[in-house]
Length: 507
Image 1 (cartoon, rainbow, N blue to C red):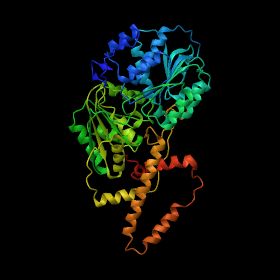
Image 2 (image 1 turned 180 degrees about the horizontal axis):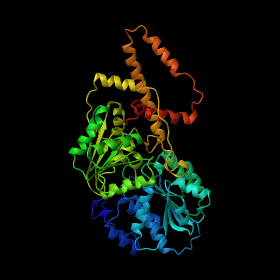
Image 3 (image 1 turned 120 degrees about the horizontal axis):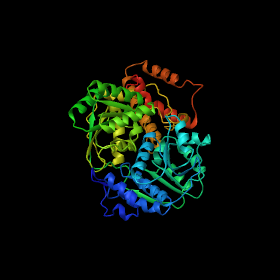
């Protein structure tokens, strides 16, 4: 969209919203919100949806996907006269997180300002009674997260038999958060005659398979490479030991001029710790992650949007889909181990045609993550300073540390509101790719560590016996050891959490 308050969102199109066949009520709302020109994803998606065709849309967050599907849904509601049955909805929009669902619901109210319709928001983390009352008479548009929606469906509170349009937003994130089985169960309850829209930043095999199963001859629209950060973001990499990150963060916050800043950590515990020492340094800050109540998360987001809070510290729950104006600085306190997450994190700045800065702290153990990020984006971000001997030893030793960490459950209905997100809350468009990458890193680090141990034991006649005893201890069978896919997931969780647990989960 072209926004008179914030510049252009990469649209060179001469098309205007009034060229797309939208109603006068929607055009008035768009004008009131400051929008005149559609973005590429909007220009291509809106006509397809108005024709009733199924659609696959591939585009990054921040490209205007929400309006691309909300506007045609509202247009069709305004054109049709439907007697809604109790507990039913005319259109269903599924989103992976509570925050994204709430943002979509707010957009519906903004664009439908001059229309009469009913809508409601169904997410975990809040009491179900008001949601049950809202659905009793039926609604035109239902926005929901999969976990709480399934709970209500199982209890007979919601019935999807009359739903005519369904939108799966951020489908790849729902895949990574473990929602796909729930999505399949929900889709099975929908009528066969419907319009289905699937929107995603990437298209892994599992999402492609989902589209084959539930979409009929879909039109596919792809806008810009999903792995490329927008050029208006100035990216900086600062190399330092892990112990120096705290002081470096405060120095950046004190010296850089910013309207709002988001600091990303890999763990919930780390987010809390980082928030505390930011506040101790004199900045207003709040943390948002899966262990926070919905009320606390909403309060933090509202304070950040209003400017009362200058710094939001977040796990990757906020890396996708949260559109907050005037975020001029993103800081990666820790680099993500899934390279696509880096792109989504820094995409929180430089929105609506503005510029922004992303500063990432990289300790010696995170250099492999940086290499993966550079491969994905096709851009060298920094020259690596040589590792000191002590840092080389530390990197090798990290591969030999005892495993730790455990998986955690999210906050939605029956513990599924965040879809079984892992304790460290890292997300990425392909969980299997993340597992394989981490297994590869473990093997490489282990080989390096073995080489280091071999060199250090050359003059030690007892080293071989010691290593043998250690290996025997590691191979001791455990009765509760997970198997199969659970073993893979547990191994990934232990690897990701090892450093944090070894340092008392200091993030």
